[in-house]
Length: 311
Length: 301
Image (cartoon, rainbow over all chains, first blue to last red; front, side, top):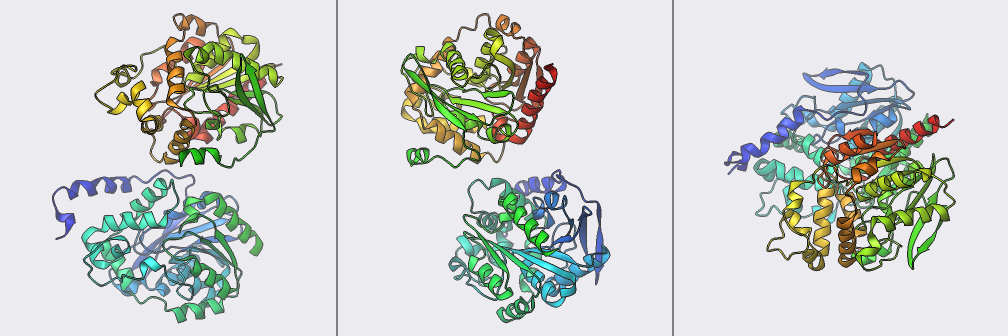
């Protein structure tokens, strides 16, 4: 039975909804914002600052939206122009229902449309986790728009190993357990989306004292829903061969930042991406999947140094 | 495990330029000096449940602008743990503070005190005006307004049949469940969400002392001669800044407000803050301290 329909659950879900509507205050607000529409799907962009070059913070998996860059934006915007957008499926973007709408090439096309709408000829792109895949498409196939590419905890299917604890379970099989990564499963999402989100975010932040970034990410995840995320999973993903071919075509400078304790995407993925793109690799001791949120000063300085070096 | 962690001190953002011991009547306290600026900011000890590392978010910032002096007060850190109530009176803490100033050739300083340390800082400012240029008093534990009623339910010395909430603030409970008491106490100290790091730090510092020492220092605080405290406060002539969180669950905001009033000081109420805003919101508190110190500099001809 759908637990969300069970008595008492209604109250439990009311509180987060209220919190979502009242967005947290920001250290810095955008100087420009707007929507871009492609084939009836709108995404929402923001521009901060006026420096050179433009740093383009790409969307990641639709489980969260562009606020996950909140620790980067105010710092980077003091030195560069910062562009970001809510990718389809979360935040102020639309949530199309067809799986095809969530193909990597759609995300890449949205990114180009956002660049066009904001008169951004080229940019240093930054991708986190799944965002690495759309970043690869952009860097490989639109090299004239990309002057550098930074990858944080890249979910790069073209090399490295999946995490051992994620091997056992696939997305579609109905299991009689919901322990651990068995929760990364369509049936479980439909049964208890909130519990999946709590689990997943706790795996993103394996560092001690991460209650705040976990709470933030859970809140953003509750702005979308299980059906939308299932659609993102049903679209054909980049195959290992696709990813390798894209990596081989990248000509711009590359920086890969990967936490050595990443419990969502193995650090071996990031190592492989750096190797295949000829990029610089920075592994972060003790860090989990989202060091830009958990250790923003360290990551911001790395990003700034990289951006300065390519521009 | 806890002992092991205590022995392996965390790395610091900044290490002292000078350190040493001062001994009075056979009791040693341990001081540190950072930076060379002017004036000296003197970060006082507080109740012996923690030691001078609780200033760790202030030291590196303030030392970039001023000279910073601090010490582990008797009962914790690298200081001795004398036994008996008499070793922990407000008089002994004042004398230790002055001895540390003498040993470091600090003629006068701006005092910063937390909780009980703010009480001692007030007494120093009143009784040694020549040594004190100003005082920042954070979450002051002063008898100018009633305490939280929930802290007045259970006697400290009697064996209780409950250990719910503040019933843990009890000699017998401390002796048998010291770590649980620390976890409870620091949980109340940091009432703000997302305070796991600060709580973990403070619990570890609490474990560097022991319940018997802590009970001695608690008893000494109870005996603190405060009958004429209001008159003492009225003798404070230096500029005073009081910082008090309006969610302070250890010491009511009314105590800080009253202290600011009787000393003619400035009160800054920190919205949403608990008892240790300097540890939980260090940027805000550091800027307030720096502004205050610089405002005194401008006043000096």
